[in-house]
Image 1: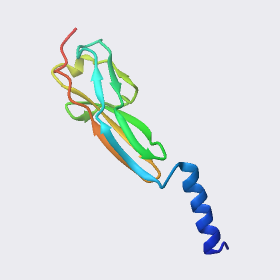
Image 2: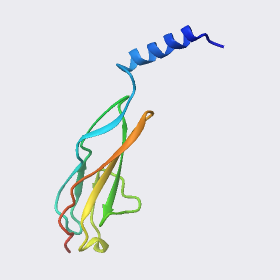
Image 3: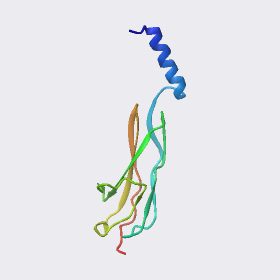
Image 4: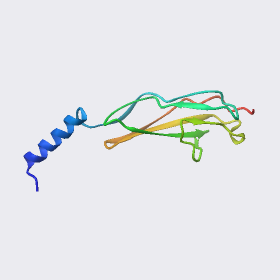
Length: 114
């Protein structure tokens, strides 16, 4: 078993290696979407800007009218016929061992037919 002094040195070494004490992720610039909200046209997500120590890992979830689109987690999404009339958003979730946070883009215009 390690003494308190050994534990403090280990934590201090970890903090020094990480550039400071751990900090949960926080969003400073919201995610965004570029492209035309039309069936068959590619929409592209920008993850926004995130802080946190250690650097958080990011996961995307595309949504139509606020409902997650199954399997849509890539940096791009191509609207389908079932999306016509719906707005599209992307939610980015940032996670590190200190916590997680999510931010959602502004909605696109309603998806139009091709």
